[in-house]
Image 1: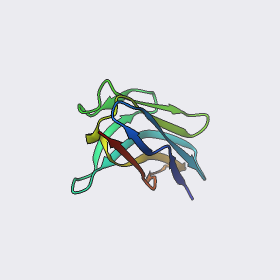
Image 2: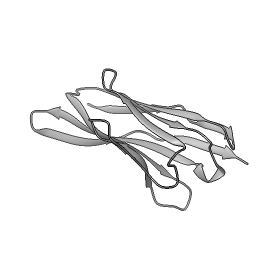
Image 3: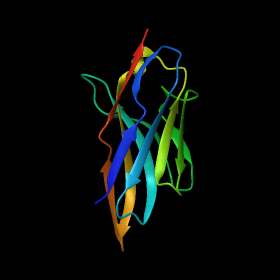
Length: 120
């Protein structure tokens, strides 16, 4: 069974940085598209950043220039570097991955979520 385990959330002051990690484990043939989402209280979950297996990143306008998504395919781990954090970045952050788990079978998996709180 495939699991995604997140780490790296916490409390930081505005202007600070955090790095989120998402480690995939289990029966994994390859990891295709990866993504980071967030959900603030009262809001819908929104896409923050995504990246194809080839490494082409895309970002929400609200985080462009501040957040960087990256991946290490040798470790089945991917990251979200968050700089210049703002109070409006406060949310639970979730990682998501499209994973090839066997012959002609690809499933999507979610991490458990990690809280990021930015104080003003």
